[in-house]
Amino acid sequence: MILRPARPADFPALATIAAAAYRVGFADLLPPSALARFDFSHFALRFALETVAPTLAEADNAVLGFHLTQARHIKMLFIDPARRKQGIAAALLADAEANGAATLESFRDNAPARRFYERHGWRCVREYTRAFDGIERAFVAYEKPSAEGRIGMT
Image (tube, rainbow, N blue to C red):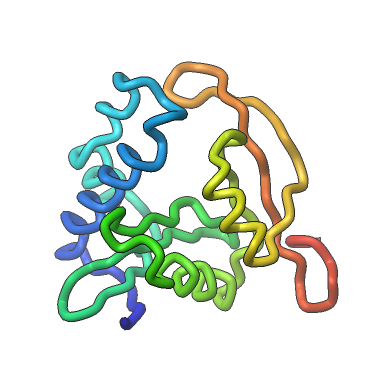
């Protein structure tokens, strides 16, 4: 597996993974109407408009997953749902951390994601609600303690 910056030619593969990961990962958290809006077209446009390139993981010319990190914040980290439990997400998270990632957010009720981040040393620092797809939803903010033991960007 190699990690590298995504190129525009990779965006269709990234959009496919993001849409599939949404459908699988958020099926119990979001209504079908919201899941339908976060489709291939939504993510393809989002990647085209981003000001930073996602970092992707690939093997044998197949994209396995990616993270999108900007200003030390992990905006997205998704893997192909068919590739779960292969260490891909851990490798992508380690890459984001090595490149300065210190914060992220998750749906409060996304127990698998929260367990994953906590297993990798991230700490929940705040719970809050905010609008998501037009509805108030519960979220949690995570920070990664620095090597000196400080939390996040402090």
